[in-house]
Image 1 (tube, helix red, strand yellow):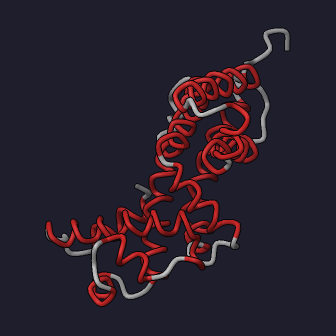
Image 2 (spheres, helix red, strand yellow; image 1 turned 30 degrees about the vertical axis):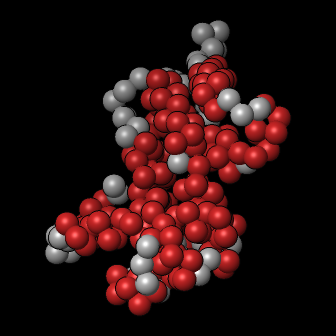
Image 3 (cartoon, one colour; image 1 turned 90 degrees about the vertical axis):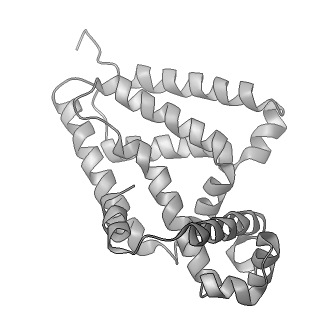
Length: 216
């Protein structure tokens, strides 16, 4: 969880068990509906039906479709950024970055609906979480880019643009979730083999790219 999310969570009253269960049921149903139909195609009626609730009951817990969508996206962003937040400035630089690549490909494997939900929001211009992207996300990426730049400046990894390194990891790993149909069409439906092969290829690719040339 990002620092801003922790502060917001600490300031709210602790929800009851029933509140947590209802909220989780609605969000799980909404994830299915939004992933299948997109934000504009999804309706509150569809979310309520998927959650086993009436629409008035759903509106008791969430005021609008927009609110459900934003909560889903904000929670997803916290999950998506957690592996980047774990990048340890005191660790071995190549191991830390390669470990991040592996965690991201595992997330593409384990959370494909969430990845597609997030991609859909971005393709629409991030109307519901643009402020979060420009705030918490940018602050975290800038902080970790500074760490990577420090490693490069100290000669611990090959010279690299840290922001574009992070962007490239996002693009390379989330491709396997966002373009899953295309990947399956080319490689087949063996999920385990596909993701293990992808993890092996990408971690090797980044390890070689970041290794310091001893002749330099």
